[in-house]
Length: 195
Image 1 (cartoon, rainbow, N blue to C red):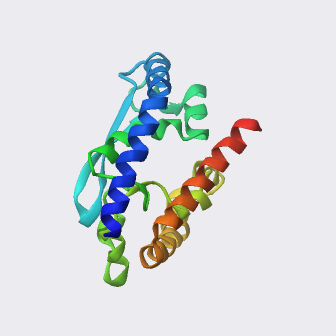
Image 2 (tube, one colour):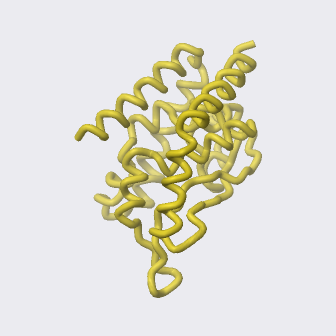
């Protein structure tokens, strides 16, 4: 029953949000096309519920340098990232049933799909737009930029902590906890827009 309520909420929330803010996605996408000199959309394979792979949608925030392998976040791209606007196309992933509004953030292969034992329970959850872990690590990019070994810090510090938080969510998830996470996410976004 809880999963049915969660799915109905996901559809309702996504529909209302897209109805009122579809124009924001269109404008941001149009500027991303010009800014990044690409099609403006970033599509990447991620690990979903039960380890099933799916294509996630994001607005592209990287500019391609003179050499094709040179990538750097543009000023507009950084703006999109600061307010999580680059994540808005994932509402379509939610509508398709590949993601939920609240759940562990979907990762690339080599992380959640390799979990063992009790930790694999996290794979029973649909990945989400926001979570307790994404609230704690809202500025994860900046945190990693300040590390001598960003990949090592992610693998040995951030990812284990995210597993712990996502497992805690697995055991204690309720509709009201989801609402609290959504409200806290919106508070952070609005707080950033004022600063």
